[in-house]
Length: 277
Ligand code: ATR
Image 1 (tube, rainbow, N blue to C red):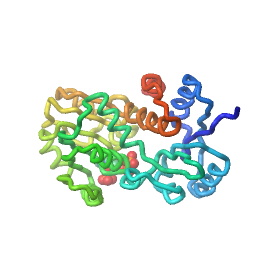
Image 2: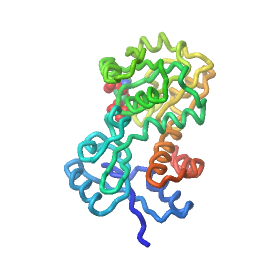
Image 3: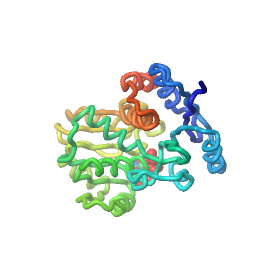
Image 4: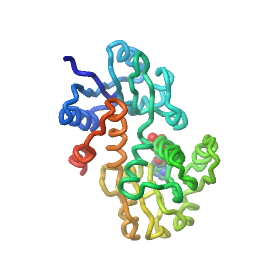
C-alpha cells in the first residue's frame, strides 16, 4: 500500500522540526504516511498548491512566508483561521483543501496543560501585535477569556487588532510603558515579540517590576529555552512557560485533524527539546 503524503511548505523550511515530529509519530503509531518539507518560493505558491491537489497530498502545514498568501488558494477556510487572518494547517476533504490555524489553539492547549483548564475568568496581557499575537488573541477570545489587553511598540497595531474582533470585549490597546505600569493587574502575561531571540538575546520588551507573584507568564520563543523575559518573571516568583508547548501542540492539533488520532505529546516534545540550546 502506498503511503499517504503530508508535508510543510515554507521558505526557508530546512529549520522546521515538524517533519521529525510528525514522521516519528507516523512510525510509532504505525500510520502508513510520510511528511516531507517542501521549499516553495513565493512566486511558485499557486502552482505548488495546485500540484499538491492533483498529486493527492492529504494535508500540509504552512509556514513563513505563505501563511496569508495561501488563503485565497484554498477551497474553504475555518472561521477561527479567517478571524486570525492566517492558515498554518491544510486538510484535504475529498477534492477540497480546507485551511485552519492551529498556532493560537496550540498555545491555548499548552497553557491549559501547564497552568489551568478554565481560563475564562482570567485577565491577560498580550505583548506584541504581530502574526503570532493575532493567532493567540483570537484563540483566547474563542475559549471565552473576556479580559485581554494588548500592548505593542506600535500601539496602532494593537488598536487595529482589537477593532477587527467582532466579539464584545473589554480589550484595551496599551503602550509598552502603560503596560509596565499596569502589570500587577494581570493573572497571565504572554510575550509574542521576537525580542529575546538571536541578536536581541538578553533583552526583554518590557520591565516586569510590577508583576504579580501569582501570575503565569509565557514566552512563545523556544530557542533559547529561557529568555531574559522569563528569567525576570521567575525572579518575581511567577510560574513560567516557554514556546516549546505551543510549537508541539500546534503540531498535535494538525496531526489530529489529519488522522483523527492523538499523537504522543511527550515524544513530540522530546524532538523539540533535543534542539534547544
Ligand atoms: P510574528 O509573525 O512572529 O508575530 P511580526 O508579525 O513581524 O512577527 O511581529 C513582530 C512583533 O514584535 C511586533 O509586535 C513588533 O512590534 P511592532 O509592531 O511595533 O513592529 C515586535 N517587535 C519586533 N522588534 C521589536 C523591538 N525591537 N521592540 C519592540 N517590539 C518589537
